[in-house]
Length: 332
Image (tube, rainbow, N blue to C red; front, top):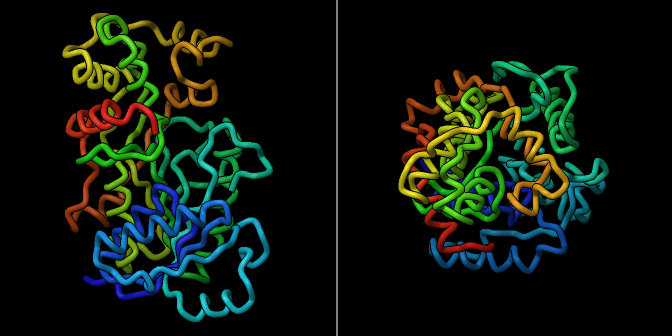
């Protein structure tokens, strides 16, 4: 089905926003792309690349300078009025994706980690809690989702909560090395030695979703009336423990599983030592995410997506693509 609409996208030319725009442009969509002034040159370059690759008209991509932290998004009155008249679908992706972000600059797609310090099964139908948060990134995503959720009775809204987004499941392409990439970079430092001792945890999972799955899900749900008013968790329904993730990466990099595991009660405090980030490459702000005892309900998202043939790939099926991309692009 063609997406013959004008789509307003915030957060362009960020990684998810760029992938989403390219995917929708292939179906004939037109765009108003809200871009911060410091990213205007990059936005124009990205639009030119997308238009050339798809054979689209550059005129279909309106780049508008703005900022979600300013009144009326920093847009002129004329541009705001034109955008309101033309836009039929909005994708709000703008945010600062930094776990160590200051509370005054963090800004909403949501995240599974609005669950904060809760433990156990996190349902798609659950939001409100008082368990606290590990950082301002989680807290501001939570506050943003509260605001958006409160508008569901007035607007046709779908809230997407991705888990930890990684590279493309086919090409491995990504725009930022964080999450599982800390472990990939760590093991690549000394494959013959570091792959011997597994620093993962068999009781804790790190829920990973490749970016192509997230984009396909968002596009499909934007066309599905059943998704109106829903909150969907775009997560792996059968995530691997961090111990198994370690071994899957180890097999690609070192050719074998690890030989022994280090207890989590030892690994966590060592990773939090002052010098640890210089040795492991894992910043202190990211350490807790390898020890979070949360699982994410995906019943609704699967009910909506699986009939359309959209499923989250299994990590063992695309880990080699991720590792190969890192090997070919050691720095981004």
